[in-house]
Amino acid sequence: MYMVETPWTGDACSLVDAFRAGDRSPIEELEATLAAIEASELNCFSYLDFERARETAASADVSLPFGGLPMGIKELEPVKDWPWTEASLVFADRVSDHDGTIMSRLRAGGIVPVGQTTASEFGGLNVSVTKINGVTGNPWDPSRSAGGSSGGSAAAVVGGLVPLASGGDGGGSIRIPAGYNGLLGMKGTYGRIPRGPHTQIAPLTVVLGCLARSVRDAARFYDVCAGYHPADPTSLPDVDGWESNLGSHDLKGRTVVVDPTLGGVVVDPKSQKVVLEAAEALIAELGLKRIESPVTMPRLGAMWMMGNVTTLLNDLGDLWPRCAEDLTDEVRVGLQLTDALYNLRVASAGEADRTAMNDTMGEMFAAADFVITSTNPGPAFSAENPMSSDEKSFIDYAKGGRVTRLGFRAAMKTASMAAGVAPKLPNALVRLATSRAEHLLDMGALTIPANIAGNPAVSIPAGQVDGLPVGMQVIGRHHCDAVLFDVALAAERSRPWPLVVPNAPA
Image (cartoon, rainbow, N blue to C red):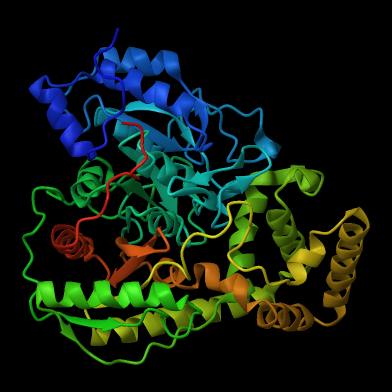
């Protein structure tokens, strides 16, 4: 009979402290964790490895940074001998033959890998709804979305199942679920935490990280995982003391721009009010200097999406397009659009969009040290929805019944053939589609700019709207990750947030 009946509801660092003090043991904690996961209805784990987790917990070295800590691993990250489905039916039977670089570092840091947390298919959507796993619920209200693509990790952490879980962020996939679930979500400067092996460089936006209950948890994660690795040529040099140096920066007088809409994104008025109040409190706490500087973000739209989708074709190989019906509707439509319309002119336009975003971000951070904005357009929406708006678009048409889908596929083939005669046509069609589906862009419009330009950005719990968390996003200058940690630490100390939902296992 185990003395520990429910999982730890404090932060990860305090659990390791409890292990070291002898107040709790890794094996007892693991058993409580596994029981809670099995009893949970959140559907935030897609795979559990009971046997090996017990073996690891039994021999845990609690002197290590995360010694004995039960942890969830996002299912897009390869783990040796675990399923590697990438949340897709296409790879339902695939098993990884290697650990990712980040997984190797986490093992060396002492974690007890419990299992895989759910994600959106290939990380392509900001929700956690897939054909292979179903729907992941938000612990604050299971009928609401956990966000994505790291939604399962966020739900597992704030739902009281594990104290820490890994994530990845290519367009907001750490910050978006952190905002919807009331967690700390840090996206470092591009290259801060190495990827690999077999690192896919394009589209130069994806970073790895975690979903954390506290700032120090995320900082310790950086101590364990950040730093150069030869398998990732974009990885940044080692930096020591992420956790030990917390609170060491003098932030008084630093300049900040506040715009909850980041230049015009449609954001729920109640959420804007929460973000503004949190921003004003943070500015007063730190003695920041608020400046007025216009924020005008280019809308990257479908151009940027299609550039990203091209990397998915490398993953699918000759399985595409035979695997189309196994894919989530939105991923399938994105691939069909890209297959038909992506050419040199579209690629060129996409690169021009990226340059415009780099210039815009450069101008902003020449004027200010920080930009404070919303993390999401509003609080979590329906868990069943693939997007935050109910407005219909061309994607809804393409997702219709069999006859409609065949019609869309035929239309894409026609567009592809026409492009051979009129190479400017795809560019015009993409721009038109973008202008008719602005709500699709708003889902990630607040978070994508930091991915495109590679800036560090953190989502900090700011408050609630109708009982659902709202995130405040702070974007910083390149390589100023440690400064952002201190901004988040000040917010945490002055306005503490719940580490888990009130109804978490207890």
